[in-house]
Length: 605
Image (cartoon, rainbow, N blue to C red; front, top):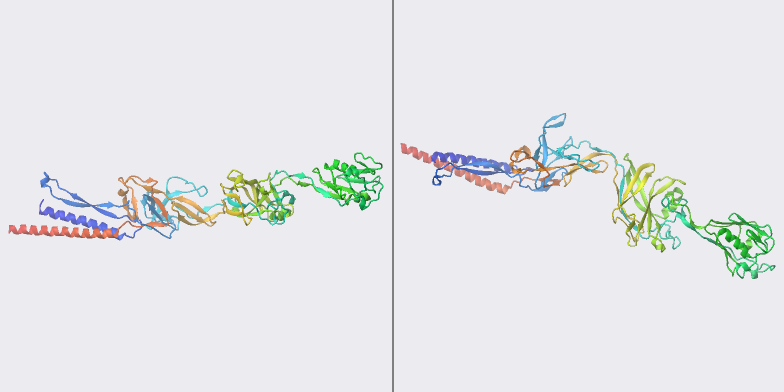
């Protein structure tokens, strides 16, 4: 290798260092470029062929670009909701418009890839980054949230509209008080369901318990007359000294009853006749009081009793019917009663109707507690205010055989009057164990069928109560504590804005307040990432050496963030010094070689 070869080698060195300087200058120039991946320089020696190692010389040099695409840039947060950054491996799929027709971009169909995530929505509803590349992804069904395909397409969100969705489910979680404090509970008789903060069906014209609930069994009731001046023997005068002094059968009827007098008991006539022996419904005026009371027992089913000290008679209604006794006989009052004598049986009532009529609203609100309210929507998207109330229908505090039981009601009409239905029972009994846990129903939801509120039909609604969501614990306020009450319906809405979540989901915010998933941003990776061909604007093109794009990179998307340039200014300045010195050294070799040539030419002179 001679002097001229040294000159050529130095020229090659100058070219290689110039190439490196160009890369350094480009890296420094793009130090603030979003998603920029710096280009390093790799030097390769060019060794000429030699016959033996002892004759081998250093040879020349050439420079190659060295990509740093896989080197992560610094991720910083931004205030733009559609900005994205990738942490780790992966690229956004993008396309660049080749032309615009009628303000609509036209694409070639060739997909490029970038890590530049400064996307913003343009006038056509596309997400475009600062270099003019259009984001691609897979659209999502707004109702189901499921992808509509598996091939990324250029995304567009212009004039997105979602139809109304009727409410089909309510999420509910609450604590019901062990002892509800209702307006009626403070003044109710001790030991009653009303005093326990509950609802007493007997206070309602229409039994509000669930449809088919049997009425309470009828119970016997009593009514006691005043002290009776029944004579103990005939014909002694009726005085205070001759009050009943023994048991009923030993005391005779008071004077004043005459043959032909009639006492009507629950529609059955007891006829007074002459003589001392009674038979069936015929009562002898000379017989004792026991004969009359025995005849009444035959009708009511329960024997009347007499207070031996006062002569006061206690009549029983029995359970067959209410008690009703009338008589026109003047002597009837001597029994201690005034005609008519009436007394209602205990218990009874009507079977559960499953609703509260307007006439019973006062009793209902006095014997129940609020269960919260939620705005639901019908199929047309009309908002409907659904009011809920809880009524305790049984309480363990009442003793053996009782269990804490609640019914849930909803208001079906705010304008009902008279016998019109105002509130509807959901039809499910909610029972709780002693530890406050819900024991039934055992499923995670109940269904309220055919919900209608003020004429707006909502249809069947599922009330979802997850495990542990509904409890009964003591509460000093005596009111229901509503922890969760929400529903899945909404009115129709127009797209207002879009944002990108950390999961890569494009989320649309609509005029109806709903946030709906619109698309999924996909990430692709390559087996030979650093062999991608760089394009203007931080994009890359597939090459044979990079291999095809593989959807499903391991990197994670960070919303409202940007990845900066991976250029290290300090490192680039260091390289700049080295390159400058190397370039100067090569020029020095050229100067030296030139001097040597001049010396050689001087020899020839």
